[in-house]
Length: 80
Image 1 (cartoon, rainbow, N blue to C red):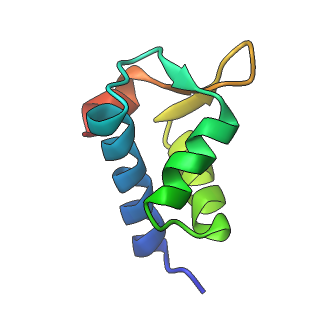
Image 2 (cartoon, rainbow, N blue to C red):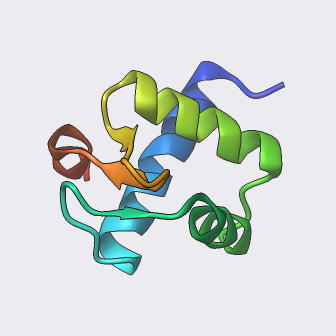
């Protein structure tokens, strides 16, 4: 079972990847399948991916865009 601290750490690692590897800025996003590929490549299990995304959305770090993409928010950009 994944602990709350691990979920938070994974969510922050995901934000790091979005900002530093994908070069996203606030308001920009990735389609869910592209995000899944990025996280899988970086050793996130399917469960860890879902938990990290849910946690980040709950914190206001990510949101879903009008076309279903996962967008980085201003708040999420500032976390990195």
